[in-house]
Length: 600
Ligand code: F6R
Image (cartoon, rainbow, N blue to C red):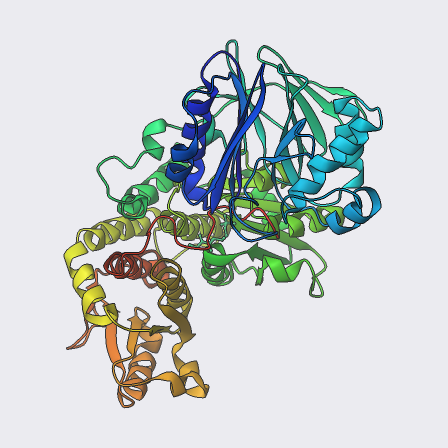
């Protein structure tokens, strides 16, 4: 999704901005641009496509020490050069980059800008034209910005240049993430610390409805009413090597390979000195006082939430509802008397989940965020945080974060059960260790996964994934992985449900991936496979050791049944990866998708 960078200092700004934008590429975008300001004025370069395309149009000769940059993921107006950011006001005095969505931009246009000819179809241009209008009415730049922010409704992270003031970047934020980074003799702006880690590790977080005046040697945070805010900087705990691909051809492959290490890291992170798994006592307390847990999430994180429901209900005895965040906020179910909310979000920035968090906080209910990004918006705003410890996930398709979510859900449910005095019939640390080893065996079987991808998915238009019990939830995740990176239409189904309609789609050779990891429903899923095979389907059965039968395509190393989602998802991730490679798809940056979905 959209990204912002900005720099003011002594170095050549073009390269810093372009490198910063490259670090944000993983978030997904369709056009990019930079604007630099020197004594002669502002120069804007923007282009549809990749940062490499932008580099081709940037004039090396332009020398400037101050500038802003943007990667755009289209919301208002098609992805083209005209709609790419930065946008300028009619006189070109003001230049702006913006993340987010301005909900009342039509109204603003009608009320204040009826005689202004717009150069783009974007809501962003309305912001910069409003600033110019109010400045022409006699307001200073900061007051024109402030007045504009009072009028617009919606989400924004923005950085503004004023041609008349070559010593300042104006910054503002509401709902969309934005940070200011501090350096010696320079300062930076970034929607994600990763973008500017090349120049500084020190960041100041911004809160909603704050404005920042950034000079090269000072940073002043103000509230919208002009009052000054003091906030200390923090060190971004990110290792550059974590965010480099190394020798891997794709981040997705690297991240799948990291999964055994992620499981082991989670064991370490949640183990106390007696080697027992524990979680924050405040979270245990919150769970203890709740009569129902509401898990709120989107996409892959929602699929992890479905597994979490099994864990909390079966291990901890807490009733759970799992909801898609974009639905929950606008169609809230009747809540129990003492609800507790658990937001699962890899990025901690997903706007759909955040809108629920905001509403739930207004109602005064307790909240937990499970996230991979300490200091992310949902982490800061919830009462408690459970960290995933997966390390930065750069590929758009989530793999190691999903495995981390399932593992941390298991840790949380079992730590709570044990804190309540329940004796578990399995040793969580031991079973997680076995699962980590099993995942290692699978990621070491890449050739076999590639063969399966070739055999089943080389030419197909569609594919189905089926499973029962937790295998059903893993099937949903397997189908999502395949469709998002290979563009093969794929659907996950409960094994028994296919015959209630969807079986009509089965043709000669339609690939069916069936998971068989659960003893209690092992015969049932095999019955479901027979139903589709009788109609011509080409089955790829992935069974747990001990439940395998002749003809199964892959046997998963044995793990405890409750831990099977950690393991069963891995072949599906790898098969999707190879299917996408064969189709020459951009595995790490699939079309139309964004890593961190910061608009509703
Ligand atoms: C799919 C994927 C998405 C995300 C979803 C929620 O591979 O990554 O479905 O899971 O956009 O994102 P987070 O977890 O950051 O809230």
